[in-house]
Amino acid sequence: MPAIRELPENSAVAVERAADLLFLIAERGDASLTDLARAIGSSGSAVHRILTALKNKGLIQQTTENGPYSMSWSIFVLTQRLSARADLRKISRPHMVSLRDRTAETVTLSVRTGFERICIDQVEGLHEVRWHQQIGQISPMYTGATGKALLAFLEPGERAEFFRTV
Image (cartoon, rainbow, N blue to C red; front, side, top):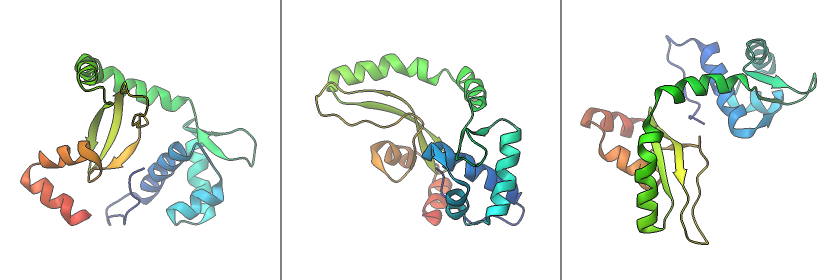
């Protein structure tokens, strides 16, 4: 999940909190109102109002009236729209398989979003013991070889901005 950070003055706080909540629910699978409020540092009533709005829009769901919140299948519609636009996975896949076959190691494909990276595809290595990253996992750019490669090719101004934020 992207780090929960101080909100700029011109931010729509409720929208920022809603996004934080969606990422938390996606990360945790199921989450209670209390846990979510504690995680984002907001009151239970404020979080409940945001969760109600997200539920009304079909982005999250509850299996019981007071049960935990989880992602709704309508999120799939949003991700499918993005996947349909991005041929990156399809174009990269043969190269990833070739690299894996030459090295027998796991190959991942990550994209940058802000100063984080998201794993969008993976070809598992051939060794019995191998590394695995969850598709959709968000990681800081300063971790792992992929993140360091992304950092290395930032424009100088962006790189300076990155180092001011960590």
